[in-house]
Each structure stands twice: as structure tokens, then as C-alpha cells.
Image 1 (cartoon, rainbow, N blue to C red):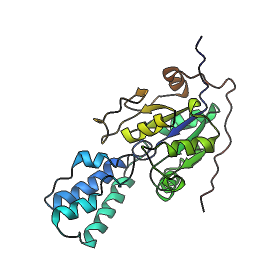
Image 2: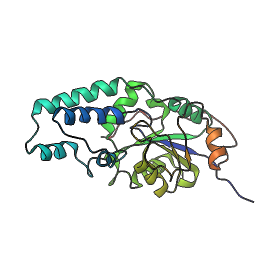
Image 3: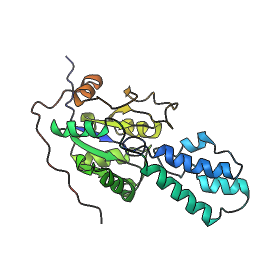
Image 4: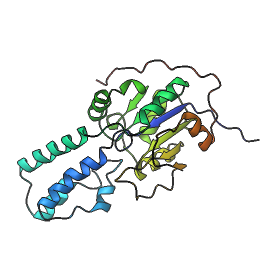
Length: 241
């Protein structure tokens, strides 16, 4: 008889999953490329989604195409435009509700992001949902970002949960690869940027987290729920030094 592990933790990606920053960042660079008569290569751009700019540097690429550095005014305007577009976004459907329901059921919650603490923490606070997560691990905390498993392993270590008892919720191929490499089950919830990407490594792919409950995750992914549901303690509000 199959013994199902207990669902003890849900770890969320941030960019593109909790808050759709992926499309605003892409649009801000696309506008710069278009203004300079150049095409922004989408396949190259996708290498950075869920990871970092090590595989593709949009500024460096455009400057190489132009044969000249971009003016500081262009860089400043691109950053202003990115900020404007990101601030217009709200928490993606179902994220806050699932995190809150998980904590009600005694399931720990975390965030594992390839972005910096300064970016992730500030947005979670601004959105009023920082308290929904017991632990946050960002690129500042690990040697390698996604698709390496380091961020998920660091988040699980912080939560005190083994990979077999946890699920990662992701929006990108890099994120799903990282979660599976960490030994976790993975749910893919693509956004506009990642909708056509290969997310076949995920254990479950859905269009939205709206109306998804911890019980749904347990049923679909082969978990049992904790036998004694109890509210978890408030998340720590400390910041790294």
C-alpha cells in the first residue's frame, strides 16, 4: 500500500508567480529596443526568466547591436518605465488565499526567489502579504540561483521541512527545474511571458491559483494533509544584515 507523505510546506516563487513583474520588465526593455530600431530576441530573454541576467544581458546585447553605449537618460527612463509598470500590477489570483489557507491548516509557507531581498521584501510589504510567509530566501542567501536547486533547499532548511513533504509553485521552466532538482513536487502556473514555454517537468500545470486549496494540492500531487490543522505562528519580520 502506497504511503503518501504529509504536505508540510508550500514554497512560492516571486517574480511572475506572486507578482507578475516578468511582463513589465520585458515590456520596458522591448520599448527601448523598438525605439532603437532593434528586435529583442525572445528566446534569449527567456533564459533570464526565473534566473538572472548571466545568460543574457539585454543592455549589453543592445549596445553591441548599436555599436555604442546607451545614454544614461535611456537607462533612467527604462527604469522609470519598469517601476511604473510593476506598480500597476497586483497580487496574482489565488496566491494570498492559498498562502493564508495553508497557514490556517498548519502548513508552512515560504518564498524562493532569484531576485534580491531588497526587491522581494519591499514588494511583499507594499502588497501587504509579507506576513503570509514564514521564510523568504533570495539570491543574497545562496551561491547559485535557479535553475540550481539552492534556493529551494535553503527555503526548506529554513522551514525545517524535507523536500518530499513540500511543493513548489512556479511560473517558469528555470523555476520548475530548480524545484525538481531539490526533490520537490512542482506546480506550474504560467503567466503571459511563460505561457508558451516547456513546463512539462511540472507535476501539475494550471492556469491560475484561484480557488486552489491545500486539499487540492494534496489530492492532485499525492500528499496527505496534516492530521491536526492548526494556525501557524506569525512570520518573522526580521531582515538580513
